[in-house]
Image (cartoon, rainbow, N blue to C red; front, side):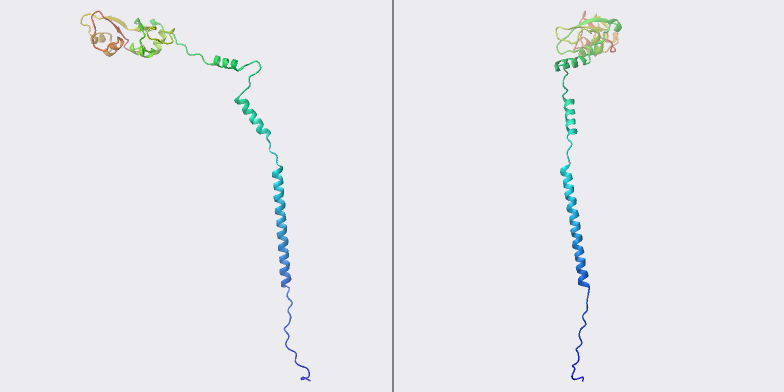
Amino acid sequence: MEEGFPKKRNVRPVEKSNLPLITLFVLVLLVLAMLYVGYEYISDSSSNSEELTSTVVDTTSLDDSRETETIIEAPLPTENETPKEKKTEEKKSEPAKKEVASVSAASIGGEQITHEVKSGETFSSIASRYNLKTETLKGLNSSISDVKAGTTRLKVQVKAIHTVGAGDVLRVVAEKYGVTKSALMKANGKTRDFSERGEKLIIPFPDKK
């Protein structure tokens, strides 16, 4: 009996595995997820582009600001006012020049002489020569606004007029009136320490008046 029926060989059992199905399912899910994400990205970008293209620039504010700047820079004259009239009004509104206050000779004292303006002299230089303040000299000559050589004569206040006598050298005369010899020479336009008998010397104030 055993010889009539050959022995069955050991057949390898067939194992059924679900691994390929699971792998396929996972792949399908990944593909679907990628498609969904891609669709959302495309839809968002298209909507943003539509919003950008549909945005309207408001130019009214820019136009208003430009018009305002133009008005400020170049205001238009009114109907009854011309540019020439406006310039005339501006000139009238300018502050008037400061008038020189008049100064009386009595308030200063001393004696008055007349100085003829020479070339290159000014109010300042003449006032310095006689030891006066520029404002004082201008006040004594308030009617004169400008000095011209050879044609302008100014009123000047000095301390005294001294007639040179015997032995009157400049140093002695200066000491007599309490001024320096250099100030005495400057007031008389002298460059040398010399005076002649009978000469009239101008004695300046020892202090500025």
